[in-house]
Length: 232
Image (cartoon, rainbow, N blue to C red; front, side):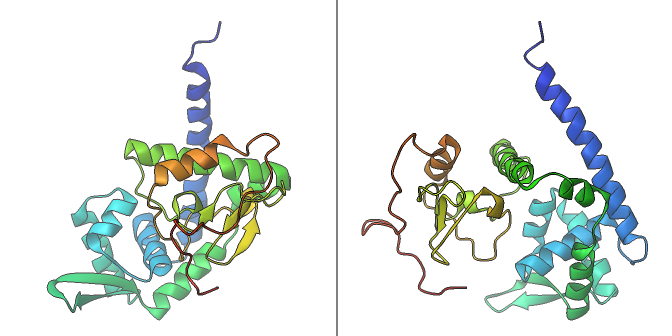
């Protein structure tokens, strides 16, 4: 009889091998740049977020604050990042990517490595299922404190899980007022706003659609938070 921990251990071992492939892809991509992996991660984070305090960078990458400070300083020396004092607190600084830094980050993100080619070899249904599982894994790791909070759909006030009867596009984004499916779930959305009750939102998503239930209302009720008027 298989021990209860055997399957999670096998999955862990498989993910470890995938992690090694991802690291190899990253080193290959960085071989012709002046960056090491930590600097590349910070540059990507700053480019996506538009800027952040050193503490937020350290929390995102799960590194010490001195490590984040040193890496940002190295990016500054290379002309890829800059720090500015915050108007409301001169002792606090916000780091952001320069135009050169954003261009380099975009170039690195557009590169397709062996791991991405392997993922592309899966059919669309498999990719969609895998993305949903990755979202669930990230959520559990957040609860463990192993990953910093992410700007994911499943924790956003604009997300309406299973608002539509259409199996291909059951969810609804109140920000853009559009239906979408699991394959379009975002892991880092610039329009993300934290949900008031993320645990309840997660429960609704993880439970799946009610069997035989009709489409739910796509817009929030009068008692719920109003959706932003802007559409992107």
